[in-house]
Length: 123
Image (cartoon, rainbow, N blue to C red; front, side):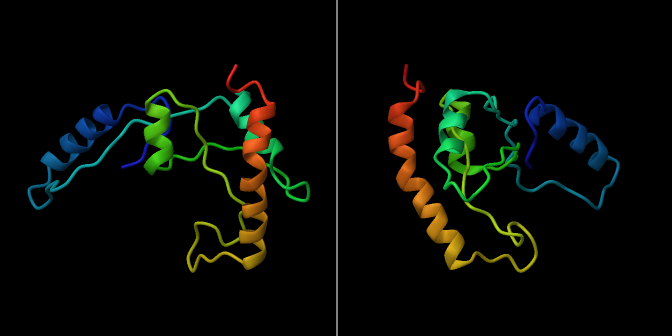
């Protein structure tokens, strides 16, 4: 299960179990639930990532519940974001990415270390 920041995974799992307990034909067999994580959009790291975006791509920040490495890093207190040049097919049925979007994302990733070094992210 994925949760937005501020929502307790444990509390939601307890609520789900109470609902399921009333349905004898339903059982939970596997659980992977973590509370949501968050990086303030004004954090210097977020600004550095957005600034490194190719100039022809408007950087848009938004909350994504996501999982994987980014959530683990934020849970450990390390500012982290997911970033890439998206297309209208991102995270939808029949998702695909264009070669152009991959090229623009690679440009972004090449610029990012320079932008981070020039920022006040590391104090």
